[in-house]
Image (tube, rainbow, N blue to C red; front, side, top):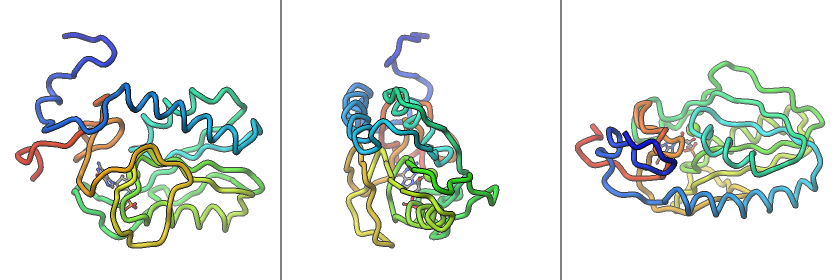
Length: 189
Ligand code: 5GP
Ligand code: MG
C-alpha cells in the first residue's frame, strides 16, 4: 500500500463519490485561520476545547500552527446518533465541562450544521464563567439554522449535503480520510 502523505487510502476511498475539499487546500486555509486566531488571542494563553470526535483531526492540524501556550480539553458531544440527520438534541456524553472559569476559550468543532452544538456548548461555557469564548469550525453548511449562531472562524462554506473525512464520520468510519468528501449513495443506508 502507498503510505505517502496525501495518498489515497484505497479501501475507504472507494466509497467516496467525490472529493469536496482537497488536503492541500485544507492545509492552506488552516494557515490563514491560525494566524487570525493568534491575532485575536494576542499570544496569550487560552484553552482549546475540542468537540469529539469529529474535530480531532482539524484540531491537531490547527493547533500545531499556533506556537503559543495553550491547554487542550475535550468534550464528548453527540447530536447525530449514527445517522445523517441531526437528532435535534445535544448531549454532553460524560456530563462534565472542563473548568473554564476566568479563562479564554477557543471552542473547536468540525462542522456547523443546525447550529445547536455550538449554541448549547457556548452557552454552557459562558455560564461556567469563561472570560471569553470564540468558536472555530472547519466547515459551515450554507443553510438556515435551527438556532441563530455563527462561528467566529470558519474554514469553508459548503452546500447542505452530508460529508465525511478529515475527522467527520458516517457510522464511525471515514474519519481518517485526509480530505473532505461525499459518499456514494450506496454507502449510506
Ligand atoms: P449541529 O449541532 O450544528 O447541527 O451539528 C454539528 C454536529 O453534527 C457536528 O459536530 C457533526 O458531528 C455533525 N454533522 C453535521 N453535519 C455533518 C455532516 O455533513 N457530516 C458528518 N459526518 N457529521 C455532520
Ligand atoms: Mg460533532
